[in-house]
Image (cartoon, rainbow, N blue to C red; front, side):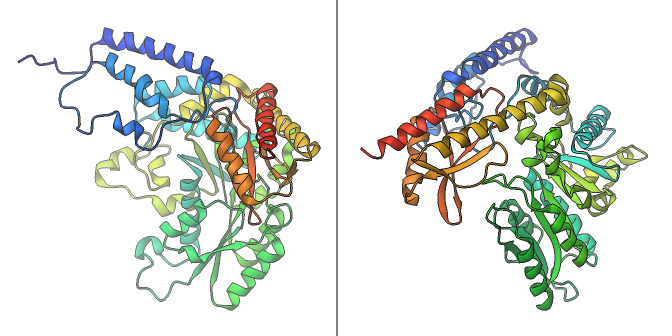
Amino acid sequence: MHHEPLGDIPADVFRQHLHEVADWIADYREQIATKRISPTASPGAIRAQVPAGAPEEPEPLTDILADVDRIIMPGVTHWAHPQFAGYFGSTTTAPGILAEMITAALNINAMTWRTSPAATELEQVVLGWLQQWLGFGEEFSGVVYDTASISTMHALAAAREEASTAIRARGLAGRDDVPMFRVYVSDQAHSSIDKACIALGLGEENVRRVASDAEFRMNVDALGEAVAADVRDGYKPLAVVATVGTTSTASVDPVVEIASVCTEHQMWLHIDAAYGGGLALLPECAWVTNGWEYCDSLVINPHKMLFVPFDFSALYVRNIARLQKVFTLVPEYLRGDAAGAEINYMDYGVQLGRRFRALKAWMVWRTFGRSGIAARIRDHLRLAQLFTDWVNEDPQFELAAPTVMGVVCFRLTASEDEQNSRMVEAINAAGETYLMQTKLRGRAVMRLGLGNLLTTEEHVRRVWQIIREAAAGRHH
């Protein structure tokens, strides 16, 4: 019986396939605009083409790579397509792809300085660059996680520890000396805050959704009333999460006014700037940072507006020792790694193992520079404004929210919710563009999100044409 030699695949075979994959990636990026965005595959179609039994014998890479085209690609939604207008746009970039390849080759664990000095120190460098762009003072320090959901959970864990008696050490269960905490968010805030409160034992019911105003920003009077009522009822106000760039409309909460409520009740102020924080790179958008100097923590996702490939989320905390205090725990087998080292990121969160995420931010930001990133964001803002003008000029449509960033919410004039929902589904099924639908004040609206550096005015015009054609079609 013939046995394969042990070890990895031969170096020459690897090199050959590496070149093939490089060409495949370059071809994909060059031809992406010609692809249909949403797959036609029905549920289960991909699984049906793959054996249910795990592979017993080796298979050649040639066959496996061929199956990527044959089986995988028909089931891919092409987020990086220039006419994909879902979510906040795609941040795929050539330098980002190159960085991910290098990161995969190195496959290092960025948990302590000793396990990878370059990863630790580069993380400090890119966090420092971003901090300069965001205009944050020296009292803030950052840490990189995967997504804003995880960043926010860590911020609220630090808030919980600071506001209470030894939850790190003694937990919440069976104690009568721990108050019922409340966390306040607007009715437009992201569901990750609820999930963080579920995971932290604060409870979903203790997330108070505060009404938003006509422009979908948190109503500060309503916040003040909610906090005062909770205090009267014996709750302890813990934190407010202010959103800078909400998921549905990209609205910005009045951070300065919220901060004064936080000061009055000694609450932690966390800013969810996962999407909107990127605007700070544009001098003319400095207003977006109003009140940031009052926050205890802020999260921004460079994978949403700053062209770093998914996933990369940065959490900044005022006096980061407050976060470190909650999560530092050095087991014996890591004690040598932790001794005297400059910074060990394992001490700043739940994760021990951490990817070398800093490399892609470093390569992308150097490739485009602040000026190049700002120019691209500026163009997306221009295109969103252009699209807004088209909506306003067409009697078939009406704007559903003010356009603040690269997001436009609109709906069919004098229409039922179902008509808007059906239209989005029909447009997405056709495969030439991809929109989202959301609910505002209980009504279904259509939502366009821009953020891909491949997207040009021509692409946005085509998207608008598709939408108008779909609207015209409903009359027939």
